[in-house]
Amino acid sequence: MSELSRRVEQVRTVLAERPDSVKFGKFPPGRASADRELPAGLAEVLAITDGPRGGEIVVYSAAELARQRFQLIGVEAVADPDAWMRFATLNDEPLLVHRETGEVWWFPDTGVVWMDSFEFEKLADDVEAFMTDWLLGDGYLGICVSDDDWARLLVELGWADDDDSED
Image 1: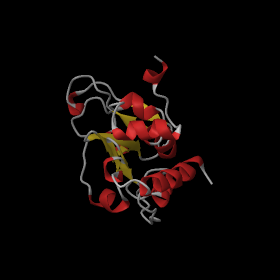
Image 2: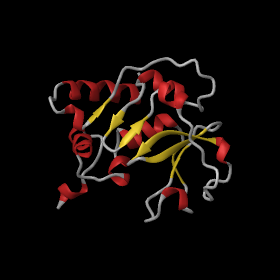
Image 3: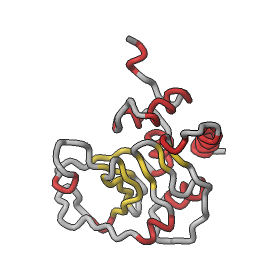
Image 4: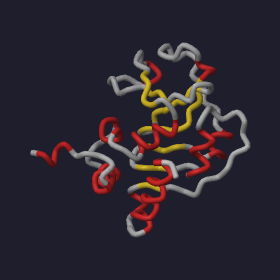
């Protein structure tokens, strides 16, 4: 079992025990996708959990990906707009996966609207690493509000370190 599969199973168990789990996240069952247009690695992640949500990060389901009409034309930070697919959002801002390499990139918060940003940075080598390290790991605290319910759950599970607890 991969680390991602193990974490998804564990977080499903923990969320099922909480009556207020809706404020934390949701990790629906996986669904195999026959969509050959999905970027490298994305179909494998959706087979584990199709459309998961944790805190401020929402990963689209295969059905949502098939319906989306997202374009990056005119976004100067992105050299080749057609090479990217929005597969998730962070605070309603796009998280992109490169269609061929599977790398996950984002527009870091620079105080401007993402489409006007000149900053476009790699978050993870692939979607599985993004899921394990950012959605279900310590990286979440670096890119999201670190005192939200999801962040506290990640710390509770031992998947993230709360630096404030060392004071």
